[in-house]
Length: 57
Image (cartoon, rainbow, N blue to C red):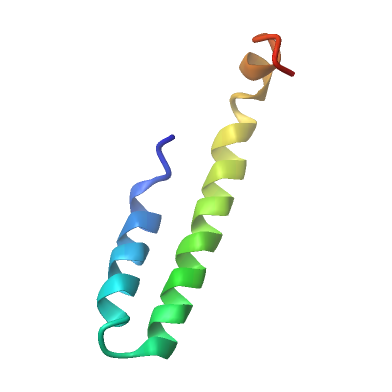
């Protein structure tokens, strides 16, 4: 599933920040996770009608 470009940038920044500053890395990882959840809910809501017709719902 495509999770969006912005959360990937935050995850990359968190990985780089973890080399120097643990507090900044925690904040960036949390932000990245939150953005992934927001994107999943937003993007998934557009596909619920299609998913309900697949028979697995």
